[in-house]
Image 1: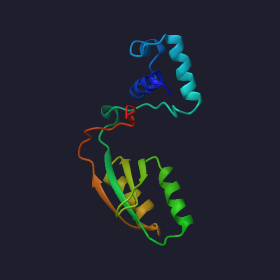
Image 2 (image 1 turned 45 degrees about the vertical axis):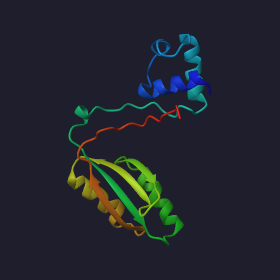
Image 3 (image 1 turned 30 degrees about the horizontal axis):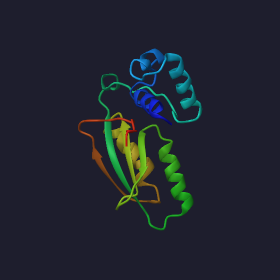
Image 4 (image 1 turned 180 degrees about the vertical axis):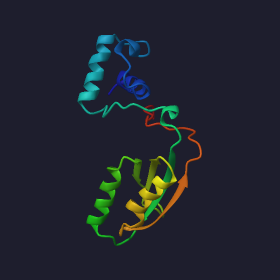
Length: 153
């Protein structure tokens, strides 16, 4: 990966549907060279997906919560694997990370309202035998939300 690939990836993280002509305004290559590079970056798996980010106005008022989950120390491996796979497959879970410290997982959960959150928590966390405890902090305001990764460092 050279400086041109990194520059293209920076641009594509901001607008995954940018045309080769548009990218050529920022990256000093011809549109045809850019198109070839973008095709390669997609085919080799460097660009894993192109997704739409919905506007806050379109989504309306949604309840978002950061949930930290502490697991039982001696929980069976199969139960832990089932919990991880289950959480990763839920549409309400926007982010699921294994973390260090007193908690084992952190989730970003997005639901319509408090009853929907209670249904989520009761159905997937409270009754799960591998979950020791969980704590929730509700998002008051999103100051920044991105999936873009810095490539300069």
